[in-house]
Length: 144
Ligand SMILES: [Zn+2]
Image (cartoon, rainbow, N blue to C red; front, side):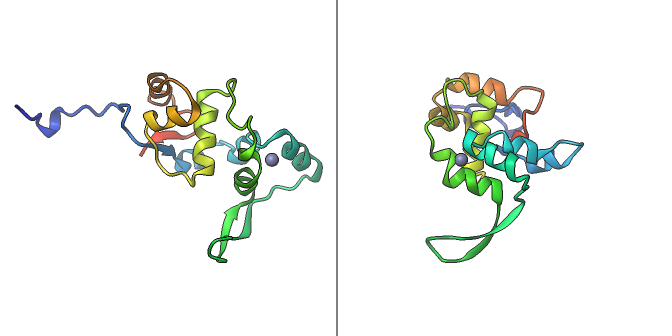
């Protein structure tokens, strides 16, 4: 049995490469994370937000398990507690990019491999890999 020297290891992402939302990517250029975040709200909350004109940046949120007060993004908090609980949060017609983004939004951006993502969004792992590992970076989804 031979082991490959370290340098021969491919740098190209594989099915087991961990991906996450790279928020640094969002802070570059004039990308508007708030606008994109809003697009992931359920129809009900999108209408509510449009009506109130609120932006909901950071809010104080009490963790029900520890009673600890944490600063959380208001929009993400709504998604966690409401929108992501709806059956159409990740639907058949949701694009792979949007679906992957939605998974990371509500799991605290805990890195996942294309294999794990595919399992959660019910898509083909190879297709997920091809989408996320391509040249253009979609919505900040990048290997860690
Ligand atoms: Zn909602």
